[in-house]
Length: 298
Image: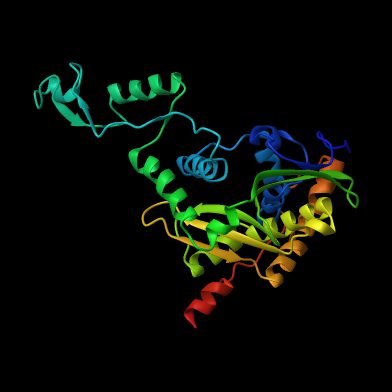
């Protein structure tokens, strides 16, 4: 297996695009293997993920919060109304006159052309609600008594590159936050940061694997003097009231995440060495009442 594309170590100021292009096992790849199969990961590796509005919003919020000195892309916010053009169906049916203000509609020819022209000029099209979310979500974190100290003085967007001696493959990680003190931290923009909802959401998406992976890769590279022993998630709601909660991953959950990522890492290494990416085993599986549904009915 080839060595890492960058020198082994901690890399600051590495553009996200260059980090994502690096080969190697990562938290996101191991989470996919934990959730699904090597075949699903293979498809992900061949086809870039389609950027959804929620993903774009999360990226912009991350950038404004964690890289405040890097300018955001120029935003284009559509107005609520626009003057009716002569070729509008409303004008043709004499419901309005040319130049009358009508509600913005992305299906209208005028609005489609506005988007096309804005994107051609290098502007990022967002709604007024999305622009508000970028500002208010960032402000909510910076005004939070627990979240703000994690960010103040922290090193952000830290890329880690090393090798797995056991499996002989490159590994990598990109940390949102390396605060002063014993913590690593990550920011998550989501719809519900209540303790119950986020706990379920975090487990389903394998955030505990991510936490264990980041701690282990960091500690392997940083050494005893900069040892990190805890992992926190700063969870932010992406709509009003932009509530914030800070969660610390318990030692038991870190241990479970480590056990699960090691299993996934062994699968990833085998797939890489053998160039074989299987899907599910070809057998019959009993379909039973899910354990969570049984508990719910009790």
